[in-house]
Image (cartoon, rainbow, N blue to C red; front, side):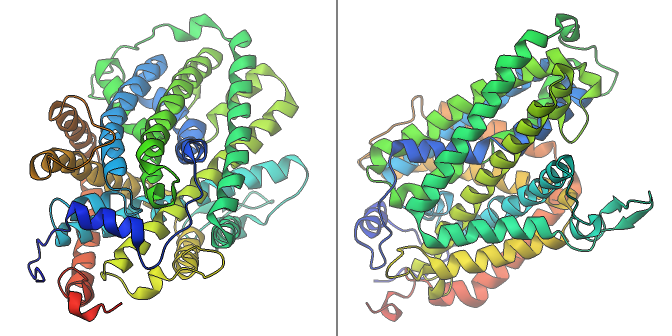
Length: 487
């Protein structure tokens, strides 16, 4: 009998059954290495190449190292929760599916809609950053893209004669989104191979920066390690470390995208925890190391620039290495866009299978075995947003949307331990409920640091989503109206 309430829950058994034998199966082609590489690809990007310098210069100084430690600990709590749920519920819906099994359909819809802020808007944000790096790199080799065609309306750019004008359209951002969308449509296995190669290049560049940079470090730049507070909360001192953690938390966003690959993992119960926790550990170590070397190379007050890693390379004095770093940054940003576009299509795929979105989002190409229509439409939407929206408008919406989803995932672990205590859990979060509660507290703390206007935008966005759910989703829900979904 159908459950017609707004709080209708999908049972754990039904979720697992749909993953094992759905009528539109996805190809199971991903192993632990590819899943870990996917996590690294999503995490190492805008954070390590941009936010490290900003947070050090404005909030924490050399103690930005401790900010990354705190950020890594916070993500570890959330990552443990994702690992348990991804192994327990090996489907590609991520926190949407986890919420469906705990809080019910209407909250699952809210999270599914909210995740657009993390995945689609996140991909658009990073695509705008990618555009900036490619313009800079092409300039180094004597090629120029007209500034007005590499920036969104409202973004001021300088012309060759020194005058400033508003951008018209960000064509490089459109190009990278279109190219990666095509790659994802062609096949998950091929996309994973490309991602693996780019992750390898990115890691080589980061390690090369560390290996060369350590010989040019000036220890005096690390003193004082914790600059004295200026009298305002968050401006250096101990509060600056906390404020820095809130800023660099964006650098960890992306590890949860690994959970969207569960339905395409060969051995999800084993590979998902390895991928999620492995990528988090590797990236946290690299972040801490890069923060240490960077603040040792350059006085922290000089790091408030869009390309702090490149500024550190300037101290080393090797022109060719500066170009190499920009190539590494481009590679890093490319992998982030790739994984976020992938994750968004898999969430829509699952929501469509549940009847909350039109069936075309779950259409799988008979030969390529990818959700090609969903991927194409998402790519087109992201390209439009990246082409015409300034990056400053996108960033904070990505953060609050992600943190909101993290809170519910941690809560889902506690709930399912009570409601489905006998369910199979190949990976178990230690110390429940303490670990999930700590994850919730860290996320809520970081959310309170975001400005009021960001909260207002989140509320408006969620209200729009609820209108769509009431007008379409509730009337087509497979759980509420199973009789309308005849196989």
